[in-house]
Length: 306
Picture (cartoon, rainbow, N blue to C red):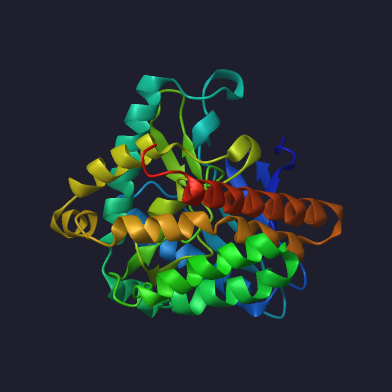
């Protein structure tokens, strides 16, 4: 008897179901064309990455309707749980498991970021200047939703980043584009079992993926900075190109910028999701942005002798 599908997750673009050893993600009706394009590209991208030995879903394919419209994606199930809570019974990973995970995430990202651009470009994956193409419009659309102090802080952060060159001169590499605890799957001993959900992949600043390790809230909150430091140390040992990226003098500045404004993505996600769940996401994103603005204000007033 075939296994009955059961829902295992949902997001703005799709609802995911598991049936046996397969995962079916059914696209939501009415999502933007750019989002649909990400799902269309994903199976070929996963095949490219799997051929390079990366831990990604296998046997991925796109399912279309009678008129050729994309309806869903299908791939083999990846074992493991969200990386931060992959311990027994959904508990946090222990110290030894976290150390192993940091090493494996660093190796994974090093290999990913050294994927030749040519193959990704042939799939239609866009090349993006994050500061100009992503964060500038993200800030502009978010400002009306924020309180006055938070608006001033967000504007200051963006202006300072762009004034220092933004990401225009940052290295370009194939990046996942949505690294989070929900998309990094690990076993109880900290082995990275797979990285899922590649619809936001782009050719952009590699620092964006590294910053994603610090992002998130609630049960899927990000890792601590010590974990990120271990990831970067492992990343730097992942090949000559990765070592150069890890020694990039602007890497820390860009990671800090992407991480600081991450709550604005939660606000945007809430708008797109809609309904009561979307309103909750918007409210949480606002609170998190306000907390960061308040913390920055306190730190700015702290005496230099402290």
